[in-house]
Image (cartoon, rainbow, N blue to C red):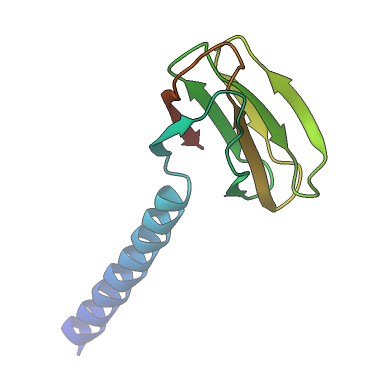
Length: 124
């Protein structure tokens, strides 16, 4: 009888521990860094569509263009302009609410051929 109670207690402890591990795994997956690269080709003087990128409140979006040629604008979830950047440096933006942030790229007028470039986005 004591062996059965002990076995039951160990089984219960094992199940409880396994459940705690599953919860930690889900939390770790939710905080995982997402990184992706997009390629663009814009006509001189043209602009890309506004790229919607969904963020939860407090998440950070890093935008890293591989070129100084295009400028880009970043908008909040209400389409209000956060800023326009043209120096080729990466920037980090933090979501103030759940929803989309929008990014739009602009090609300069000084080129005769399309402007091609890539951008790496990181969400964490």
